[in-house]
Length: 386
Image 1: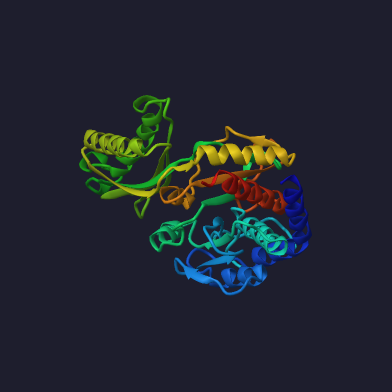
Image 2: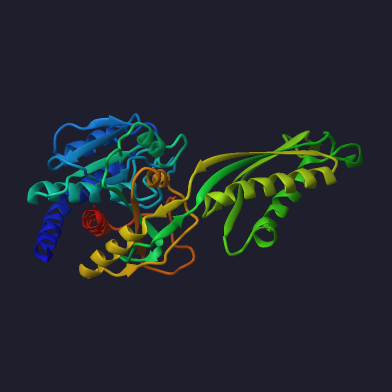
């Protein structure tokens, strides 16, 4: 078995120069969610394993190996609508950017699958090129709905993570990413002249107080053992500096690690906004949309992947968790699933670029480490399959 693993790793290493060229090509010409067909076609050509089936619209699935249940390796196709500021020679030529490392994941997946084709594998691999990870409606939810994971041994994901030290791979059991829900607040008051505020009912003031009060949900209204996040990212009101508007609105996200806590957060949001608005003579409304469930790693799969990584001499973390979110979480509802995180942090500087930052650019050498993470997940799935 050790000999087979080293043979696989050597084959992956042989594929890395071509995978790096692919990464640069994808990075320079990214596609946003829902427009990934060109990216998918490019990756399928690089896999060179025959035609691929369409899934979830612009996604693709392609099998490597013989018959029988397969281990699914998933990588994301989409980029973000961000103007790149890395200065890399292969920087994006468009107004989109692979600012979440999806280009690295795709290149690593190609290296693993091509290596598997060369050496031959007893348990087949299904390459899943998933669209729309960054936006709703979720590409992963559509993959599940269309039955692309039916009968799978397990599904493995890998994601670069700047909150982990460079080249460390995390294989933690249980919840590792939060459920992510979005909310919209609308405050309705009575507009008027800014010079006569007593004749109006100011929705801006009520909204601002609501936003401040929402920060107390986590610190004073929610069980601290469970953990939660409530963040407001958008605030809108008014059209002139000397006019009190009739309405004001805000949008944000709430995140928890367990499904049972999602209605608790929704109830607290509603309660705080309605009562705060009422105290200012306004009416407050909250609409909460459930977006993604928590991402929960299969414990036996995570434990075996950690052992496999350690056996390959790769530094392993087994405790990392974050309140980030990923629609990979949908896959755990239909088969065993494991998300591995690969560290990119080479500095502890507070202003170091993170995910979704226009300066975020993992080094090409991380393609190999992500590929090894996929390999460890694949081997763990084979080891624990009954």
